[in-house]
View 1 (cartoon, rainbow, N blue to C red):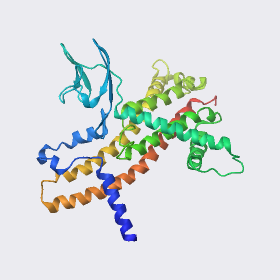
View 2 (tube, helix red, strand yellow):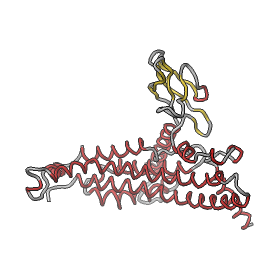
View 3 (cartoon, rainbow, N blue to C red):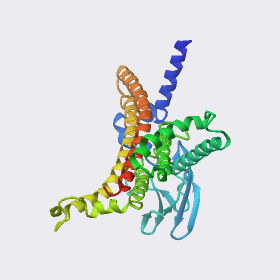
View 4 (spheres, helix red, strand yellow):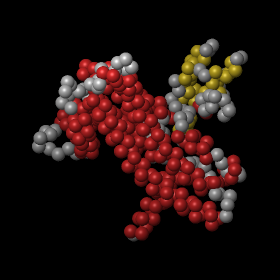
Length: 341
């Protein structure tokens, strides 16, 4: 029975790893026709379909107003998917006498739907946790259910990260930092799942990480203390580093923008790279599909084993990247709350 259980686990792991690719050797007429780069970008980018299920396209024409239809209906009402050699490749364009142009596009794409779902799921989890605390005596009862799952994580992040990095007024920033942590963690985990509601590369999208980094940028600089700004424009360094050439103030000013930039790139690059590596490993199976059976079979085994390993590694990376983003955001906010030395 134990051997059968291990075999079932292995089969499920193989299916979990292979299911995101959704191509077969029959779909590869020639080895040279398989563009691995295109496959990686197709599975890590945004799209108007989710696992071949068409999503709503909401666009506004310059002449005929708003249009709503499913992506499977394209071309429709003068709209079509841009050609692969177009600068708008992968996007819906409108055909006009002057050529294809991008309309105002509010479509529910894969990333948008994933964002809505994960945000709603996060709100539900937090509200369920809060309801347990409202209905129970926290001093004499042990949390159960969702509260028991989230409480240790919340306490760890607040006590060991936020409180230590921000300082005395850490409670002012705890809601944002905890929300950022759980939002990133939840979307990282959902991105690993190959089936709905997973499979979207949301935190591997630079637009999403840009918005998260901008939230930290605003929290750091809008609520920064006067001593923080004084140290930027008139730091405690020798005068010749400030007058006549404001070298140190210029360096400090550049640092205002490099900090959120590093947050944005770090999260985007790590999540995108993990997904790209996993898909690249699986593509080895189809790259070798036209070779000898021994070569293809051995490479399939190697690809599957490495894919399972990468999936397990992605679970670790999902937590680490959420932790690092929250920790660095707390450090930047704490630096902006400094007082006179």
